[in-house]
Structures are given as C-alpha cells and as structure tokens.
Length: 99
Length: 174
Image 1 (cartoon, each protein chain N blue to C red):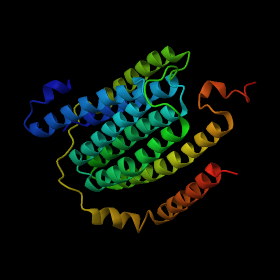
Image 2 (tube, rainbow over the protein chains, first blue to last red):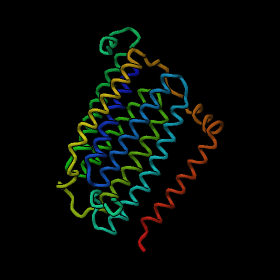
Image 3 (cartoon, helix red, strand yellow):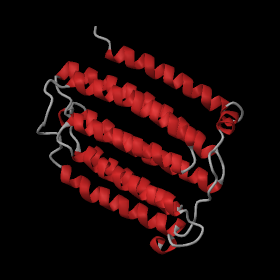
Image 4 (spheres, rainbow over the protein chains, first blue to last red):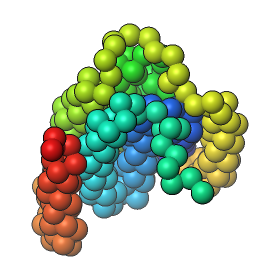
C-alpha cells in the first residue's frame, strides 16, 4: 500500500466535512459533518502508525473515538435544548451574540 | 506518480484494489451526507462512510481500532444521531432549507483545502510505501494504555463521565 492512498482519502473526507460545516443550516447535519472530519483525522493517525511501525497512532485513534462519542452526546443535548427553547435548530437564526 | 508505482513488485495488488473500491464508495457516501435533502438519508449515508473507515482500518492492520469504530460509531453515535433527528423534527421526508444562504461559499473553500492538502501530501509522501505488518496484537495496545498512556486513559474516562452527566443536565426537562 502507498501512504498517499490513505492520506489523500483522509484529505478528501476532511474537505467534504469542511464543506458540510460551512454549507449546512441544520445543527444535526453540522454535527454529522464534524464526524466526517474526525474520522478523516483518525484515518490519518492509523496510516501513520502503520508507516512508522509504532502503535501510538492507534492509541491516539482510540482516544479520538472516545472524545468524539462524548462530543456527540453533549452536542446533541445542546441541540435538543435549543430546539426546545426555539422550536428550530437552524443555525443562522441563533444570532443573539452577533455584534 | 503514484499510479505508476502501483505496478511495482512490493505492492499488494489485492489490497490496493480493495482500498480503491472502498475509498470510492466512501467518497460517494460522504458527498451524499453533505448534499442529501433528507436528514435521515444523510444519517444512513454516514453509516456507510463510518463502516468504510472501519474497513480501511482493517486494511491498515488496525483490527482493534476497526472493532471500536464499529461498536462506538455505528452502534452508539448513529443511534444518538437518529434520536436527535427524531426529537428535533416533526416531519420525515425531504426538507427545504437544509442549507445556508451562503452555502456555495463552501465549494471553493473545500476544493482549496483539498488542493492544498493533496499538494502537501504528494510533496512529502509521494513514493512512500506502507509496510505489510499483519494484524496488530491487541495486547500491545492494552500494554500502552495501562503503562505510558495510563494518565490520559483515566482522564478520558473522566471526560466521558462529565459528558454523560452534562448531557443529562442539558437535556432534562425542567
């Protein structure tokens, strides 16, 4: 296997995730795009672990998976609270803190 | 370029073919996640991306990470997403207004970012071949977790506990 295969695939996933974060208006869809970005990073970590013959990349990948699970839990709880207060999860309507 | 190196001797052809098929499927599914008009369909496309990532982990000889990916992401995170969709929307089906007004700005940003990353990656790792190491023993991972990564491991367990309690506090009705 070539290292660039994995790295280019991860770069593509990362860019698609960034597009999703910018383009989407629904908060749940933005969280899904963030999952794409996190998976791209984890794929890179595993590829580098294979390249260097060290296992630390896989350890970090497992840490990233654990933190991502916590992030989704808190993120969706916040989205639920916003929905309960405003009956909408459109991100462009949340502009109270706009200067 | 990389396409020429594919014909070299030290490349496992079957592995590369499997990688290409799974990668094409993953990119198609990821594009569907960010362009789908239906939130539930986007969540199901995300399942395809996540299982593709798990398959790539197996190709990269990281079996335990692949198993954790399937357990945590497909087992737990996707159920959370589907619950989130169910609790925040009344109607199931196509929905207008899923995108921002300035959504087209994301296309040049994404393309520019991919171009920059691809340029850097090809510049740095153009002909680097990944060695064929076989399956990683899970014993090695657990040895790392319980020796030099013990403090971060305990810290992560506290983060998970705090996140669980925080999510309950945030989502509670009163």
